[in-house]
Image (cartoon, rainbow, N blue to C red; front, side, top):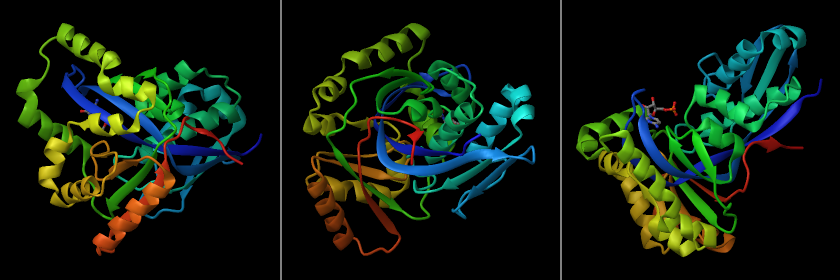
Length: 314
Ligand code: C5P
């Protein structure tokens, strides 16, 4: 058996609309998810100790059974016990490049890479829908992280409809180290404040979900119109996260002032991203932000939209 190097891209949300409550306690969402080239790198190989062994170069994430990547490996071992017994344990090494608790899906991307890597290593031959079904048991964003590109995500976020992949735009990411937002907190607070606007029944949810396919932002994505996409982006969670975290709000305002195509918080934050039309413009925006904000805790990245999800590296 080989060892496999997997590249696990981060995601941003170009659109995140909260439609209502679900019977399972989650929220019914309509999102447009987009992969970016900023990625973790995972090595997956067989081990002879019949265990899941997780290593990472980051001290900020746990290397134990609470890590989503570990839980992904455990799910594969539990789902295919005979293959697991036959092949032995799994060594997983994570090289972390995606910031943690940032709204960029880093943990989900790692779990997606583990599912894809074990499927290859054990020659299970699972299809994309089969992998997506396993992924959805672990987290709402993990199915998207497997296939990536540009996609409409509905339900909890696990139901995907691919749309024409965007690849012509660049992105600047801005995040304060140590400033993280709890995703359950963001959704709960949203429910407390805006629960009275939620869709009341399945028919209304279905109708609101269907609207996205003919929405102006999807049409702009299909036409590759960066400036339009920038104007039409939406993230409902900003309504609760920005008032609670003025630092995030300020980053967003500074991006907006610097003339980017559009700016938005990703997921539940704390990363704010700015869409730019070229690499040169993204680098210039990053330099401007760095010169305006002297806080050494601010991290900035220039990255690009990416047309795929988890893939093999070399
Ligand atoms: O699925 P995931 O583990 O990423 O979700 C993290 C948290 O975000 C959930 O525990 C829930 O509080 C919230 N969430 C939600 N509705 C969704 C997705 C996430 O309320 N569709």
